Structures are given as structure tokens and as C-alpha cells.
Length: 479
Ligand code: NAD
Image (cartoon, rainbow, N blue to C red; front, top):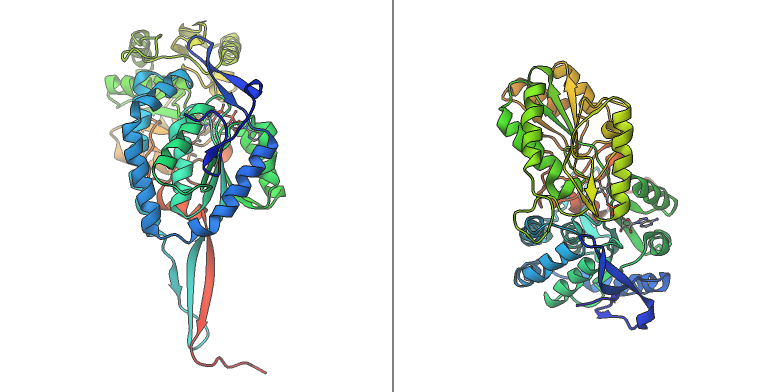
């Protein structure tokens, strides 16, 4: 297994003293070491990706398709190693880690076909005898900066979409999940990807990020992470005339209308807010419930949240594993205390042991409270009472974010009104806010970012449209 940056098809040499500890979030103990890159490593990775871009960019779609399909097969045989890393390095529970690998296998297969579907168009020309066409060409070198929460799935998504489009890639995984990032390099190498096409450079964002922003050979930065860092990257990309695809934070609403089935609503809410201990951009962390069913919902929701097993992430029955770092527990404590001081009622949780934060339910949460406004990235449900459906819609949109959203109702007219008027990139009717597939337009609006990641929407982002004309016969000129 690689533990140093993977550049041009090989690990790099470095003295042991240069390596940093990799810490298991469940017991806060170091269990491995990894070399955190310096700016010169990042430059070398861009050199390698630039060197490889013409051959890969001119490869047949069938070759790119095959590499992605091989990667799916290699991953299936390496499932246990990846699951172990996702548990030990990223604090995933057993179930979440298995899901992440299964999703990624399926995604690699689905995206392999995108290589063959990068279509152009024929445009009716204004000049007699002219054929006018638009084709799509790869951008060249694309860089990806990935977060810690679904470190394998989200980083592999960026890699496979860019490779399918014929780009070469430099990946900077989260500094908290470097080993997972390097595993992606190993899988693609075994899948037969030529050297230099994928380079993985673990490192501290502010240390190595600026190399990606300022090097003109990097044509697009595909970023998934917090809104604060996304804002910085948007500014740097604008300054350096680079494209940016930004998948950022969220504070997604799950709206429960009065005709919803209560038990289904409780299960949907629990899944959406507590999966991966709430460390999901799409977490349904604002649960907006219509007044007539508010008390009954709260009672059943708290009862179910109490049953969720907290603890050993390797136990298949565990739902709530550790948060990624202890400072996150302190941050959540502070936001809960502020919300309670502003009038919210703490019905469950609000405590933690080590990095294990207990499922927490806050009731009577109102706009302006931190639990309503801020992304807490922990297992904290903010339950909000709405007078009626109009009020629920207004509350749902009262946020700077716009990633995912959901509404539970059997009233088709109302459901479609919510679907059209919710200010979010994704709306799920009668399902949770947490949902992703390989070939859908995943992404947000407002402070949740721009651009879409998935299927042909990514092919649009990851290619340059080129206009080509062919003059048949002689074209008449005015002089
Ligand atoms: P983060 O923003 O702290 O870090 C994300 C990545 O950015 C990491 O690789 C980090 O090293 C890098 N980074 C940090 N500062 C940088 C800089 N100055 N220059 C270059 N790179 C820099 O986010 P995180 O804590 O890893 O992940 C949690 C956040 O990600 C949440 O806000 C969550 O909502 C968001 N997220 C969004 C999506 C989505 O699809 N919209 C998916 C997952 C996570």
C-alpha cells in the first residue's frame, strides 16, 4: 500500500522523519504513517499529468471504458482492504463502509459508459456549402480536492468522470483520509491505467493547494468540501481564469406535511440525519413538521433515536461511529448550548464520549438559532414547527444553503409545488434528503456551490466545446 504521494505511476522516496501520523478517530491512536506532500511534489504531479494528457486525451473511448471497468473489478477483489481503511482512517461504521465500496463499484461501471457518449452536434450554417459542427475535447489536466466524509466514493467519482472524458488527473485527498486517497491510485494502477494519468498527492490544503490554483496547466478544479474553502477556491480560480466545479456544504430541510405516514416519516428522518453520524453534506438536519402532527412526530422520533447503537464502528449493528476529530465535538457542544439559550428544547443527547457524539434531538428550533442556520456536521436533528404547508416552504428556504431537500406527503399537487419552489439543487419526494447515484445531476445552488457532478452533466463540465467548420467548394467573399 502506498503511503507517499503517487506520482507518474510510482511512490516517491522520502526519509521516515518526514512522515506524519495517521490517527484512528475511534480511539484517537495513530496506526500508520503517511508522507504529507510539499509544493514541489504537487508541481511534479502536474508535470506528470501534463506529460500524459495528449496520449490519454487521444485514446479510444473503448480504452477508457475498459480501464474503468477493470477498476470496478479490482475494487471488488480489494473490498475488505478498502472497508478496513474506511473504518480505521475515516471513522466509518461497518455498514457505511460497505455501502461506500458497493456504490463505488457500481459508479465505476456506470461512468465507464460515459466515455462513449460524449457527443457533439451539427449546426445549420449561415454560409452556403459550409458544414458546421461542435465537438467536445478533453480539458487536459484536471485537479480534484476531496473531503473526509465519503473519501473513497467522492474522490473516485471525480477521478472516474474526468478520466472517462479523456482528462488526466491530480487528486488531493483530505489530509484526514490520505491512505484512502492513495488506495485509489493503487486500484487504478492495477486496472491498467497508464503512468501519469492519475496522480494522488496527500497534503495540507493551504500548503499544496496554491500550486493547483496558480499553475496554468491545471484547467479545472473539482472541489468538494466546506463552503468556506469553496469560496476561497472560487476566488483563486477566477483570479487564475480556471473553471471550478464546487460541491459545498448544506443544511437540508426534510419537510413532513400533516398527511404523511408518521412511522415512515420517523424512519426517513432518522436515516437522513443520523447516517454516518450526520457527517453528510445532504444530511436532513432541519426537520420541518406541520403543526397538527408535530408532537406525535417528536415523541416517536426521540424514541427511535434512543435505540440507535453508538460505539464500535466494526460492530455491524452500530449506527453512530466517531466524529472525525475531537474539535468537531466541541464545536457541536457550543452550537447546541447557544440554540438552547435562544429557546430550543434539548430532548435527547447533547453529550459525547471521546469522539462519539450521541444522537441529539433539539425541538422548537427557529430561524436565527445556530442549529437552524449552521451546518453542524454531526448527529444533531433540529426539529422545527410549521403552522401550515406555506410556512413549511418558507422555513425550508430560509437558509443560505441549497443542496438537497425532501418533502413527505401523498398530496401530489403540494409535493410538486414544493419540488418547483424549494431552493435546492435536489428535491426528493417521499424519500430522505440523502441520496446519490452515478448518473444524476448531483449538486447545489446558493452557498452549496455550482456545477453538477454525475453522468453527462459532468462530461459538459469536463470538456471544452470546440466549433469546427468545413467549407465545401469556394466561399464567396465581399471583396
Ligand atoms: P474542508 O473544506 O475542510 O476540506 C475539504 C478539502 O479541502 C480537503 O482536502 C482539504 O485539505 C482542502 N482544503 C482546505 N483548505 C484548503 C486550501 N486553503 N486550499 C486548498 N485546499 C484546501 O471540508 P471537510 O471537512 O473535509 O468536509 C466537510 C465539508 O464538505 C462539509 O461542509 C460538507 O457539507 C462538504 N461536503 C460537500 C459535499 C457535496 O457534494 N456538496 C459532499 C461531501 C462533503
